[in-house]
Length: 280
Image (spheres, rainbow, N blue to C red):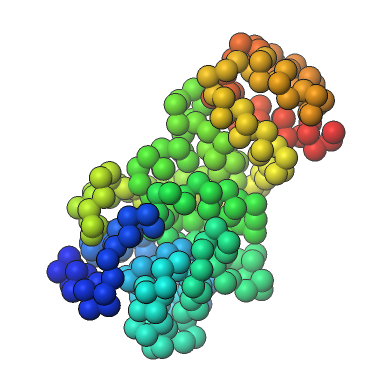
């Protein structure tokens, strides 16, 4: 893979200035690429979705491992570079689409692979939560190996009673288990970001639990007012969600009161809310 000097030269050659708003921090450490491949353990001929391949450093390694890669790249300049430098040499291994992953969260993956695919990506910070929210509506990958800025990973893996616990924590942890993780220094990227990153490996649960969009919206509302007490929040929504009054005994059973705040409730309690709303 290209080192710092080589990466800088490639970007100069194609006339590309890294765009901060797109989170374009290019990986320049081969050890981290190897770690991602080790975590993901891609099988020969197995379909992989990659979000934002950039200069194709990880993409090329996946192709070497005989994976079939379906990628989406928003930046047209980088898309053109990948077409001319990778896809033309690997037309049966790389299928790349130019577009926004928030419109195509699993890239251009054919429907025939919806039951068996993995996601491997170096995710820009700004799109991590909205993109994952879309992915977690299904179809679900069997495994996700994601490089994230540490703050984003903290939100995904947060536990109740912590400041990072949020809607995306609940939704993700109901469907996936974190089976491995590895810290990544900011020095492994060009340009160097202001925060360190982490690679996390997520495996789909044997029985993944999916929240309805209706429940997701309500949980998101509660967490947007996370310092308010549940009694006040429930009262503000009970006319639109009559089943909320039937949720109160569940909270009390779990030793919570109407003075509790959203971040104090367990994932089990949020699942109970989803069951009530589905019946309503």
